[in-house]
Length: 274
Image (tube, rainbow, N blue to C red; front, side):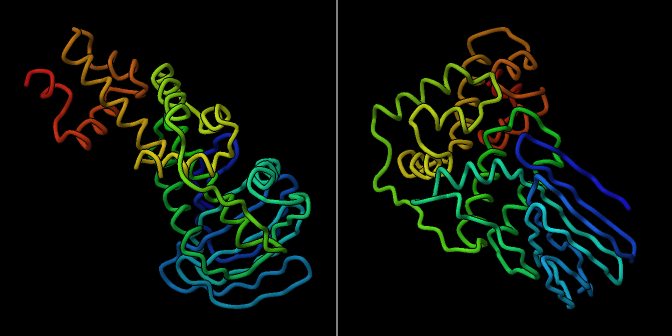
């Protein structure tokens, strides 16, 4: 078996490649989402929660296995998939934040061969981000993890939850609080949870209200502000580009250069002498 993996606070992402075979799987404290990356349809026999499924999984097809549910899988052919493990405590906390009513009634449902373009898209963004092996991108990873969790709660539970609706956006005072916090911690690995707590909002709804108010996601706004800070330091100081990168929350010279070029079309060095 070949695999690449990465772990952040609440989720673990693994890319697996296996020869034809079979196996048992059980995770007691994490829910698991498997997504097929095989270019050719692959025949599976799967058994979970007393239900047997036999069929072809195609690119992007999804298997959902809740925590404490034994899973047996047999596959014919070269398997290639992404496995995402989500801490049960994390999903429960998101359910508490987002469900109107008793969130303890929510249970993730075992499902075979799910077609969900949202989960597939979020998974590929998570996988791409982990493969970069770039630190100081916690806000973006938090946002993706929250979107994934809310999608599972909304569409893949045993009951259809009622989610609260937030009208309008954030007030000028609330936005000022957020802007000041980001400005004061711009060199740190800012977490979505920390910002949302300032306004006593769930992470998911904070992200939606922030984008409605500002026109950018929290992650996009953070990158924009880091680039603006880098511009100031490049023009107004003699600091090395590496020091500027670290002072603006980037983990390396190359990380700053890549983001800087994407936003401005120039390298930091070219901008400094322009």
